[in-house]
Amino acid sequence: MTALLASVRSDEEAFDAAQAGAELIDLKEPNAGALGGLSIGDITQIARRLRAHYPVKPISATIGDVPADALDEITARVIEVSDAGIDYVKVGVTPGPAARRCLEQLATLPAAVVPVLLCDGGMDGELVAYAATLGFVGVMFDTAGKDGSTLFDHVDGDTLAQWLRITRERGAMSGIAGSLGWAQFEQIRALAPDVAGFRTALCVDGRRSRLDPQRVAQWAAALHRPSGELSGALAAADARAPGAARF
Image (tube, rainbow, N blue to C red):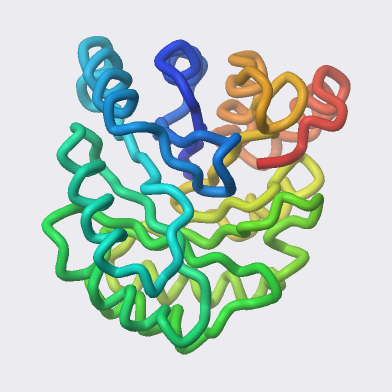
């Protein structure tokens, strides 16, 4: 089964997502970029309040959009976010000269880091394979640009399937995100990642608007329902939430 990761920006959204069936609650600020980070104070407050009601529900948070060569800043932010009481720290990594060194540094930190490999324009398969050897708890594949293109516009399904397999063979969770919506649902189901992440697909009017718990519930139900029961659910979701298709 693919778990639903819902990206939220406040404790109100966090509770709505948790109550609607999201398995992972991901803290980030959509106004601050693709992986925009909340303040440490906000992360701490949301995590504390959520834990009081959902003590075993996993919580992740991003460190913000930081260049891969800014290793000191990345290190400091990872430690701060981890110490704020969350389970997984998400760090965006763009392919390039600094990517391998960044991954090596992340693997040494005393935190459960999930590298988010940003696949805009493609991804270096050797970098994916290398990331899988470093012992991370999970690896996600996402996009940085929110321009209407999806992860599947940048990486084909067969290649993604290979990368997810490599990640799992090393004992890590595999996850995808990146402007995913109902139009990509069958591709998501075919890949069956451990985690599928969403923001705008769960919101009322774009990724910067309010999260809608009804849309969270629709996605949770669709991801968890056996394949033979999906057609009616997808038709109903399309009818209720036209255009709600972006992370």
